[in-house]
Image (tube, rainbow, N blue to C red):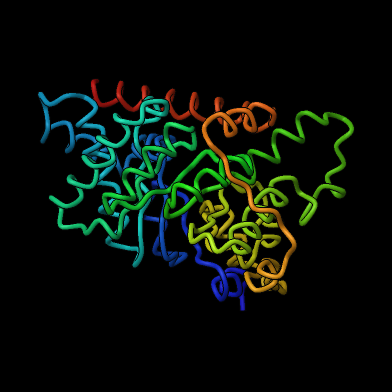
Length: 314
């Protein structure tokens, strides 16, 4: 049995890609997209007809609407392959605007509905800012499920749990990147691998906390740099994995055992945390890694959203 097949026994495997033609190879349950992945996909010859089609069909409409139509088209193609859900991201330029995020999330759901896709198969993806988390809480109350992305800290996870969001995506690889860069020449890869990886430690803490206090929000580890980070989180609710790393897991027959366990977490001696806006902002401010990576992540998604706009406008 491959490591990928072993992993699927106790973790829902999600494909992290906009390249839906790769999905049939790995048979994931769900799929996630973001502006960067969609931008990468539409620059491939196979997907340029989708870009041209969206422009031709909705010419004269506002650019943000055409962009959302294109993103929804990708989501529909993905849902024709995967049996579960697809995450579709709200424009990162709205990351600090609660009302606009709610409105855009509802519009995406309406666009999917017009294509015959039930809202239960969509997760509206929102950045884990305070404003984004409050927007997600409103969407959830309206029956729209959300995926809170760009999540780097325990404080963000606590606030998401309080907001009763459907799912969070803590970014393992980007946490790892920050600590590795900060350590510089003092970084010893072997000493910081597997369960000692700072990204793995972060997701493990969040997973155990959620299970200990009965928080229903799903934990989906994301942004992996190597197979070791994935295998160290086997047992997590979901893991969203790039096609390259899915291929490595499919090729390996090395043993893979569960490392995260909900029953074990329920017996842990942990302290419950409550955060209002002031406490959230202070906790995030005290976490230099999370503060920097959240801001950097939003800037990166905004930059790619602008590039996608330019492609559509051209």
